[in-house]
Image (cartoon, rainbow, N blue to C red; front, top):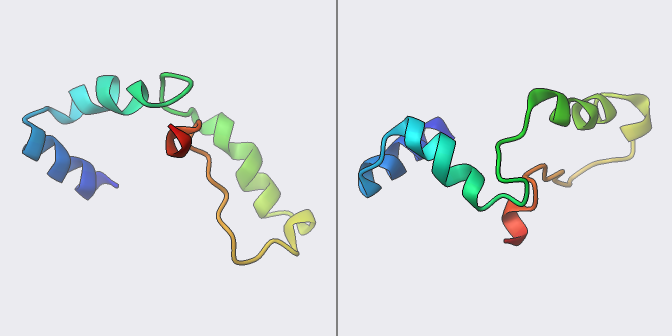
Length: 68
């Protein structure tokens, strides 16, 4: 993602800081980037025995970014 972000900010004449603080959160339903502890529960689940039958799928944790 870092390389893609660097390429896109160059194309659009933005700084990386500006993209991270203004552009990326703008499309998110929460209007901010996710905090590590917000993702930790999903990671813990996927690493647990309860997720043993979870295969071949994506768990999208993007704050509804992909549905905007």
